[in-house]
Length: 138
Length: 382
Image (cartoon, rainbow over all chains, first blue to last red; front, side):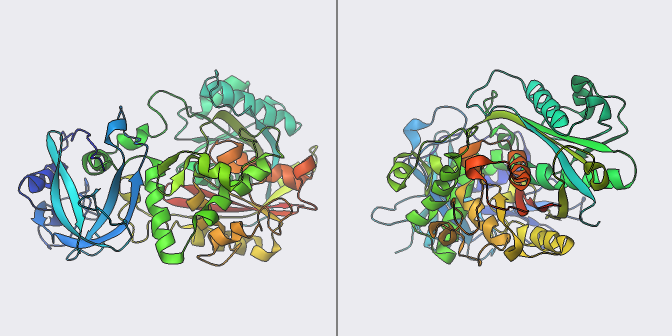
């Protein structure tokens, strides 16, 4: 299986914390600093609270797949033929129900992807940055 | 808002091409003039305009291009896809006509799917997608909808044959439709020969790439009685909205394929005073086979979770008990979001469709997915 290589444009600082987390070997998502509630994806404005401050906090490395798809023809801008196939996972951390993080399936030899399959996070090198990888829990 | 107050009095389309030469403005103008002529009107009769925020041409440009007189009413549909063209625009037209602000409202639409940047360019400009999804390789409508299909199959069960039956059904209708883009017969073997894009969705499970346009004219029912065609009344319109922006639409909703179509259908049937068993046919916004399956359920054509098996049983095919997408839909007929489905509904209800005419068609539902909104419209022959 391949790995998608697409540049991370961090002109928008809203997402820097996610990639800082991957560099530190953690999955991090945003919370409302006042209430501690998950707010994901990080929005430009927290609903009803334009003054709210977001903080990045780690979430469980274990969880399950809400859904998946194996990409055969990449639709990313540019030429990505050499990177397919890969399987995208929408990952739900155990301690953040309803939150979904996009990443790819790794270490999946002999395992068919499936909804609700148990997974464990590990970062994956993707060119000059890391993305979220999720390995089946046997 | 009550039903049977407005009617669709004129319809027009351009050719649907894989790659055309005309601009969006040229195609909109061509389709609009055809619709106005079809209504037995002239551009000078058009005094209301509903434009579409995704097309990029405001109504003054359209009015100028068609040679219309002074505009008395303009509005912009604030939704996407089929919701805008088959739901929102009709509501706005009815508001204008009932308020006495316009007599004949033009609704045009055109698309150049082959434009530079591609059809997914607008997703690439969404910060959350660019920041969190594209680096993970999660990008493009077929990929988004593929994850819906896999979740749907997990919850309700869906075989490859059942999924394939959706596009095979629409292709069977396209084979009877001279203007359809894809008319070659497609059996299961031919379906399997189409390239896989993102499992389980193949090219055959996706809407076409189309350069084309469509337009229609809306008038009061009383005015429609003086015009050339049978009166095709808008008997019910429902629109379901929710507040998930495009940036989170395909990942963070509790159920990613739970479009607000249950709500729109309930509104439309209540306004029309009918229920699904009264329908003679339906047009369903088929961006992808999975979204058509779900909307077929939302229209009440079958039970929840039974949409794929409804198609596999042949109910929606030519000769079936509930024909769906009778000009091939967006997957075989042409992708001019929503509007060509509405136009086909009008043609069927007029009873002039030749080989593909649904016998004695008098009531048709049109389901219009548009981002995270959804419309259901019930059209009736007076």
